[in-house]
Amino acid sequence: MSQTPEFPSLNGITDKLNRPVRDLRISVTDRCNFRCTYCMPAEIFGERYEFLPRPHILSFEEITRLARLFAAAGVTKLRITGGEPLVRANLPELISSLSTIDGIDDIALTTNGYLLAKNAQSLKDAGLSRLTISLDTLDEDIYTQMSGRSHGPANTLEGIKVANELGFSPIKINVVVQRGVNDHTLVDTARYLKSTGAIVRFIEYMDVGTKNGWELSQVVTSQEVIETIGNEFPLEALEPNYPGEVVSRYRYTDGDGEIGVISSVSKPFCGGCSRARLSTDGKLVTCLFASGGTDLKKLLRSGASDDEIAVLIGKVWAGRNDRYSELRSEDTEFKASSSDDKVEMYYIGG
Ligand code: SAM
Ligand code: SF4
Ligand code: SF4
Image (cartoon, rainbow, N blue to C red; front, side, top):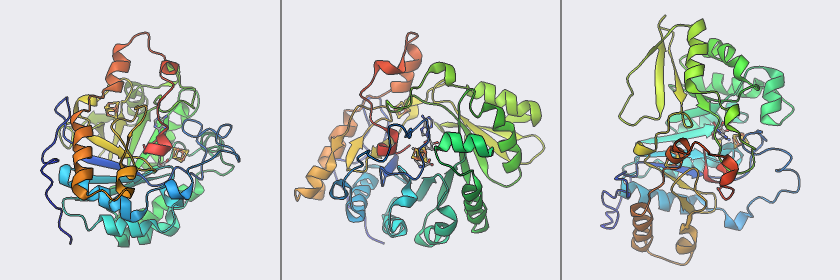
């Protein structure tokens, strides 16, 4: 195990709203094998779309070096995301090297699951602690429509099965709920995964990025989701696992497991938001809805010392006052199009 050095500039830092930095989401690629309509719609991300050129993308060594500095600032959890992280070659090598960082006690991965079955074993061997798998619906046609691809959910379901057999536990399943698209299939998804040990989390459709044409009317609130599932399978609210948990938890009263809802739109949780994001090209982004980030790669590649990079990270975090979702809900006239300079989710990681 390597040692996490102490950086006076980072010790116990908090932002302007007194929030520490605890989680780091790392987008390892801006590319994806899906074209989900709510994230990378096919009509925009077509053949000619120019993704980041290779030299702009952080290497595994660079990511590990930065993650070590974030650990010194208080980060204990890493989440590997994208884009689709499993399209990045040799990903288990990155997981292995991140798992040597002192202070990191949890490394999670968010994936659409398409390539999971064949990668799950090597991810586990590399030290991956947890898996979140996105599965918006079991319905073949709706899955095809939402993922922008011509296949249904079979590969992802196989990935879930393999991950389960390998002992990833509990597996979390992300379902983005869109009114008039997959909202009538939620009970089927819940039924299928109930009693498998997987925890399904229904996520309110968010106005991330600028390309999905988001409208408030397309959001199905968590309250509605709980009523819909609860009508079929009675539910009971559970206490959060820890203060500030973004998921509201419910258990099936028949003892067959639990589900969660993430109310990013109807009940924003900026007050406890301790998440930093590292973009594919090395920008530190302090909010999912930010319009840009601070270039750490430039410093990294200019031969800066760890201390110099740590000072910049500390400065950015100390100046953070983001609370986009809370402001959105306070603004009754809010229109997503009023902020057309937001960074895209596949680039900073969901
Ligand atoms: N490709 C991987 C996947 O889909 O799991 C990881 C990256 S994806 C950006 C991370 C998560 O963000 C996924 O669970 C996805 O469903 C969710 N997501 C993407 N766009 C969203 C939106 N507009 N609203 C809510 N969740 C969204
Ligand atoms: Fe790809 Fe994930 Fe975005 Fe879908 S949500 S397009 S799988 S990055
Ligand atoms: Fe955190 Fe920004 Fe989301 Fe609020 S809107 S919870 S500050 S990422």
